[in-house]
Image 1: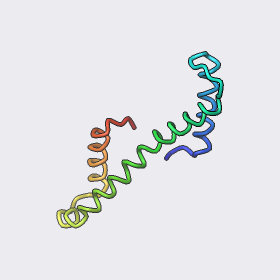
Image 2: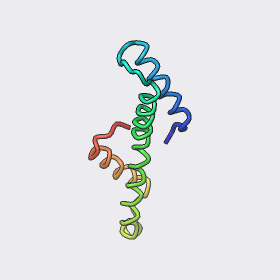
Image 3: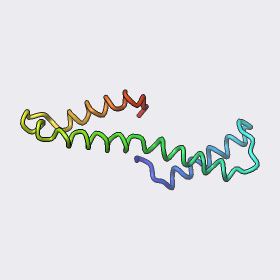
Image 4: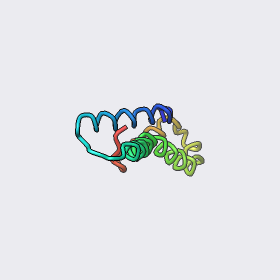
Length: 92
């Protein structure tokens, strides 16, 4: 993840604070909303890490074939990652 967990926590607090202040949401427990926003942000920001992990697993399964054919790991990584991004309809 490109952002630290502390910074994501800060973003969640600020987002909740601004949503409540601008009356987009109404809540009696802003702390609970902040926790849910924080969890959602961590999940979303971690999506690229999960996709990268899946790409590594896929490429590891084909490592012998890639070595025999002389395929470039970085190029294959990019291609497989783009396919997974399309599959999951992710925005990175």
